[in-house]
Length: 154
Ligand SMILES: *[C@@H]1O[C@H](CO)[C@@H](O)[C@H](O)[C@H]1NC(C)=O
Ligand SMILES: *[C@@H]1O[C@H](CO)[C@@H](O)[C@H](O)[C@H]1NC(C)=O
Ligand SMILES: *[C@@H]1O[C@H](CO)[C@@H](O)[C@H](O)[C@H]1NC(C)=O
View 1 (cartoon, protein in one colour):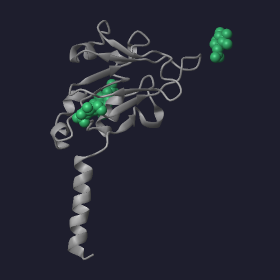
View 2 (view 1 turned 135 degrees about the vertical axis):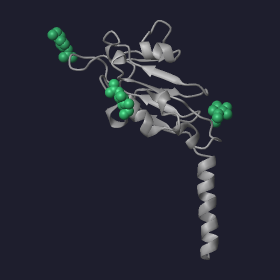
View 3 (view 1 turned 180 degrees about the vertical axis):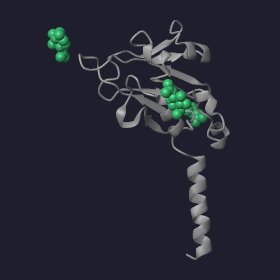
View 4 (view 1 turned 120 degrees about the vertical axis):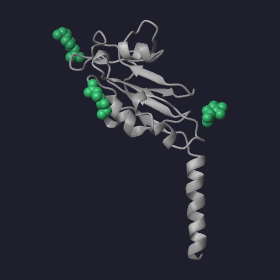
């Protein structure tokens, strides 16, 4: 194969990877998992863009005397996320559901997903910790489309 043909092939492979990218499965917090008093905004910034049908895995130990209890709620909007008002929130994972392999949340819709733990009287949430926003984008948009909106992640 000559150099030009190789170049075309490389281009095609990259183009295919970019357009037909497999949905990702991401462990929230990487090896640290979902833990109390942690800034996940940083993690969300490093791991975006999120795409529709990507899966987030939340993993945290069942509460015992040595670990703080953890949970995962989906908050309905930016206001409840900011003020840590859990009244209308949907419980995705109770304090025991993050054990073992954890549980999965698929980002099916094109909307912001507001995640937060409510344990300890929402202490972490109010402090801006153990919470983040994931905004899945359709695959056809370029990655830069959403990377210009870091304010959504605060
Ligand atoms: C997401 O997955 C569903 C079910 O597998 C599929 O019908 C839908 O087309 C997918 N959406 C995108 C944007 O890939
Ligand atoms: C937690 O503490 C209680 C009371 O101090 C004790 O009875 C129990 O065995 C402890 N549990 C674990 C898992 O260490
Ligand atoms: C978390 O990290 C983000 C991004 O670095 C930063 O803007 C934010 O102030 C941090 N929040 C807290 C509560 O430390």
